[in-house]
Image (cartoon, rainbow, N blue to C red):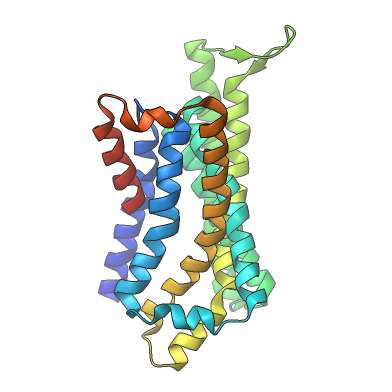
Length: 264
């Protein structure tokens, strides 16, 4: 129990600091940073952890899984990948703290309740009541944090605007909507993990420790996330002609931020 609690604390530390490197990654453009992060953090890291935890034969359990099961988990990961793009872009508009609070609050709310509804694995009434109370507190926190963001913007009088033909649109509102959407989409990662339980069951039946077998879920889910993230970033690299960012002076620090973000 103590070890599990320690892992949980470490995970919360990583999750809470995840967005820090999404600011000031120059001389990389957003797409240059995101393309590398997609390859290393989204695609490679789940396989590296599965190899470490399970061993070199981890892929055999994925190969034994029916294709529809893999596709279902990867599809949920694809929707998570879209939401992660919104997450990273929202940070540019409204900042790390506000985006992270909104994202984590909504993703925890939906990611906890939707899988239980899909699987029909509802806990006892007393446990469910406690979960709902906790989710209500989370939702209140999201509302308070959102209100604080609007109040801060009003006090500072910052009103960045963009638009075509004289039309005006607040960049703050764009970022806020992206943060809300990313929070809802982030729940797809837990839904996808729930849908990707078959390779985990196969591995456990073969004698793999359930704690390590669960790593197989993430190889499936993040494969779909990789497709959404990488190919969108690649499109932006081609459109904006920003491949040269990878050789700009001072880019070593940006490479370091990519690696740090991928690890956490």
